[in-house]
Amino acid sequence: MIIEMMQYYGLTKELKNAGYFVDESYGPMFEDLKKYMPSGDLIALTGPIGVGKTSSLHRIMIDLEKEGNILVVSSLSIDKNKVNLNTLIDAMVADLADEDTITLHKRTELRMRQIQKLITRRNVPVAIFIDEEHDLPMQTLIELKRLMELISKAGGRLAIVLVGHPRLKFELHRASMQEIGMRTQHVIMKGIDGCEEKFFDWMLSSCLEPNVKISDIFTAGARKALISKLKTPLEMECYTWRVLSEGYLTAEKPISENTVCDVIGKNFDSLESRLTRQGYPIGRLSESIGVSVSEIKDYQKGRLPAGRAHEIDEELTHLGITIGATR
Image 1 (cartoon, helix red, strand yellow):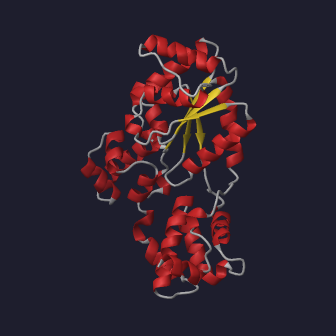
Image 2 (cartoon, rainbow, N blue to C red):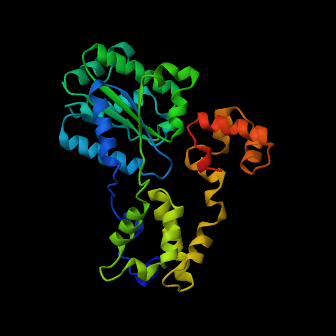
Image 3 (spheres, rainbow, N blue to C red):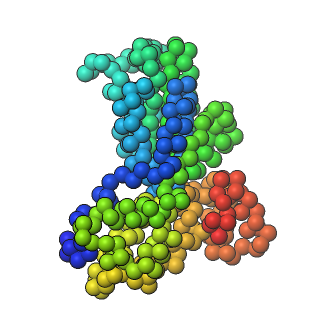
């Protein structure tokens, strides 16, 4: 069905293969990162689900490697809950060691001295990137801070870039993490915010046959509805693909606004959906603000008394979530 649908609408490839969209916020974000890295800072790069953190991270590392002023290290570990200091040390050895194989001492003191020498002899800053950091154990973060201090004392510079959901900023400012949070530089990834129309047209045009226009596939109302409702690259890609699939089933061309609304659904802009995209599903939100799961559900459905709902509104504000955008 996928091949037939693509032929019907004149698509040469799937939307997920459109390429990398350079939004207006990338340049300033990249410059901010480069400003903090040479000092060996701890940096939190945050953005909501689907904003393009992983793809932007890949491009950032490529651009840094091209410039050659900062050495890049990245962890390939899949299960972030099991990542610890030793995992990240292995990543540094793999990316920085001159030899194909290097044996690390089993004794902690001697192993740390090896890492000190490995980084300081490079004479340039080293940056280690950790994606999905919101799932990284806090004990690992504390150990990384100590490692940065050890490298700094030896004359080296190790910057650690933590990439995660917006709640990462909140986690770093918990009372137990205050020492780390206060020393963390925060860089926000805005993604396509403010240029949704430009991204949507680029995404489709990149995947269409040369003689096919966007207006051949979507009515003006359908295009406007997609652009107004979908706010991240992932949303644009997934929901536009679903709309195309639904349109093909009914042989609709161009696809109407009604089809778009039917596919996206009424609950897309619900408070629960928006909080989840910020990295706060019900369980996580309950834990973060100390409110029971049942009360969170009542809050999301508008069942709480006005006074209690206002109290939770304030708690969400402390998490950096703008209530006006979610309710």
